[in-house]
Length: 347
Image 1 (cartoon, one colour):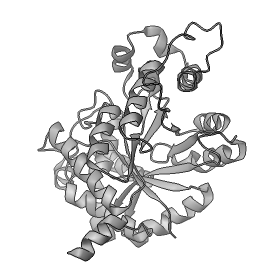
Image 2 (cartoon, one colour):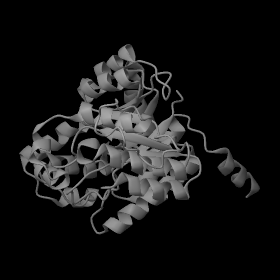
Image 3 (cartoon, helix red, strand yellow):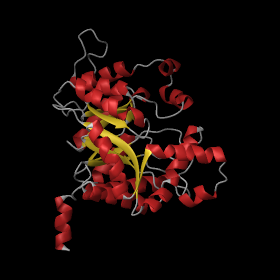
Image 4 (tube, one colour):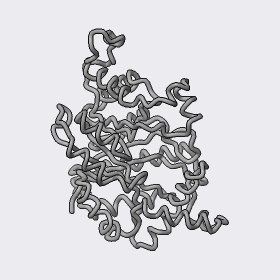
C-alpha cells in the first residue's frame, strides 16, 4: 500500500546532549525528510518539559522552510488557548509570505503543559477555567477572512501582512470534539492516536460524515498521527522503544527529563509496578520491523480512512531515528523527490 507519510517532531532532548543539539537534529531530520519525499514536517508546542526543546513552532517553521525545498512545514500544533488569535494570524501570514504554499497551521485545544505553566503563559486565571476554544478558533478565522460583523470590537483590526492568505488550518485532536469542529469549518483534521488510540476510528469517521467543503479544503483530508519505532528487526525496534516507553511512564507521573537511552532504561531500578506500566504502554506505539508495523498499521489506516500518516519517532540515537523513517518510507512506497534522484544519477 502506498500512502503519504509525514513527520511530527517534538525535538526530543536526549540524555548526554543539549537543547541546541536537539534543534540541530530537527533541522537535519527535516533536510532528510525533504529529500526522501515526506509530505509534511510538523513541530509540536510543549512548555516546561525537561525533555522537549520544541516550544515555539512558528520560529522553527521558518528555520526548516529555509533549509528545505519541497516539504510542507507546519505546527503540530499551535496551542491556541496559549496565544491571542491575532498574534497567530500575524505570525503565520508572515511565514506564508516568506514561504508561499509550503506552510501549514495546525491548531490544538490543549495547553501543551501543566496548569501552572498555562497560567504563566496566559496571565489569566479565568482563561484556565473556561473552554473558549470554539470562540478563539472563530476569532482566528475572522482575522483570516476579514469577516468580523460590523458591531464587533475587532472589526477595525487587520492581521498584517494582509496581502497573503493564512495557511491552511488543521485541527488537531484526540477525541470527537475536534473532529466535529474540523468538519463544521471545512478544515483538515489530524488525530493523535498515540494519545487516545481507542477514539481514532470513530473520530475520523465523524469527521468524514459531517465534513462541509470549504475553499481551502474542497474535500476532507484526515491525518492519522501515530508513534512508531522501526528497525531492521523486531528485537532491535523493541530495544529502541524502551526510550519512549520510559518517557511516557515518567509523563504519567508528572516527571520530565531528557530522553533516556535504552541502556540507561535497562539500568534503572524499576519497580514491578513500573515495569508493568511500561509494558501496558506498548499498545500506544507501533514497534517492530517494517513488515511488522505494516501488519498492524494497515488495518487501522483502512478503518479510519486516513489520507495520510504522520509519524512521531522518539528514538535516542539520531541516526537510528532517521533509519526508522527511511525503513517506513520504503515500506509504504514513498518516492524520493525527483531532484534527489537526478543528483544520485549524476553521481
